[in-house]
Image (cartoon, rainbow, N blue to C red; front, side, top):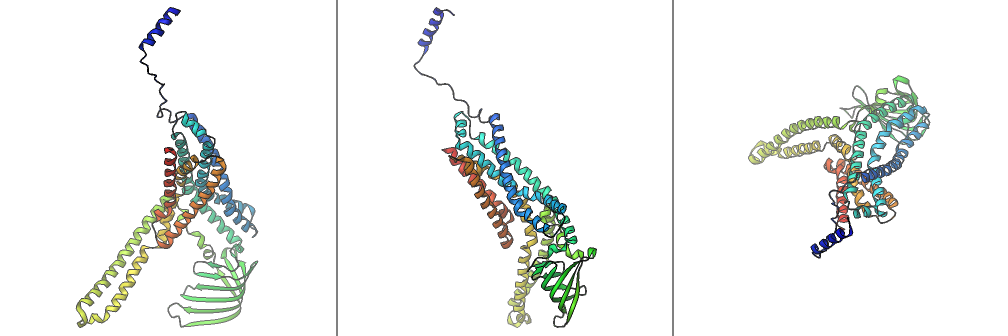
Length: 449
């Protein structure tokens, strides 16, 4: 284009200009809300911080639980390979509890570092929204929650069952593991109270048991020596023994005897029966749900039967009061009242059955702890966005404090749920709900700024 043509176009533009300047359109926040490059960058950063935090918590729980147990077993001269297998079978429990806390600390450290280094400010100035931080964090939290749930629901029950089986074999071959000074050991129908222990020798031992013909025995000995009888179980060689036996029905009819020596046998099935039963912790969520349904139906049948008896006693009491003193039942009104009160208390005790409550608590716990990693994401992002400097250090410290508070709330909820019969759902999920609520409030406050 020659100069003349160019000048004519400038003149046309000048004549058509209305005196207003139109700035270039700002980039759409919706169109640039997600950047896959930043998504991969943040996911890698969060996973790296999560791995570091997981190693930290894994080491804490590993040393606190497994290594101390292994050290105690090694002192009893248990083969090293069996101790290593015990540690291996106990690893799923450590991983399942470490993952949520590692998710919290990893997200806190990553978001705190980005906020203190003004990287989030640069992202916002580039036209990106806070979703560029939330979406990777939520994706990682959801991924960790799923893995933690699988470890808690599949690997943990399997590992616990194998752990119990191996420990039973170790107990049979090394019975000295059960000898703890000044402790109480309970078997099937036997309770053993032990005094000071020196090797296999026990001072001042007390045995309470029940025989097959219905007799209750109290056996006291000045000393005892534990012996391994192989497949027959264990034997206690008692010295200076006093034995008192009585029938369960007629307690006043009893016999007693003294002996300088007595050999007391503990069968193998009694010795290890406490470890043979599969509890709710060793079940998967599906099996645990089925067990809860069966227990609930059984409980309801027993409650219905007891309610019938309560109603019968209530009718007897009402009739005696209606008929007045002229009827013979008037003199039995106090008896009706006492029986009615006992039956009503029995119904209340059935409704608060501890076994069923423990199963329900364990069922909700199987979901609350793994998915705590997802609820922690919102709390971690909200706190991380408030970091001004030293984001990594602040994230680490805050992660430890919040993990301690969460664990304390979880234990408190479990204790209150079992002790006072509170809702198992709220007892296990309240810490997660609090973390999610506080995290959402902090995020809203930061975004509105």
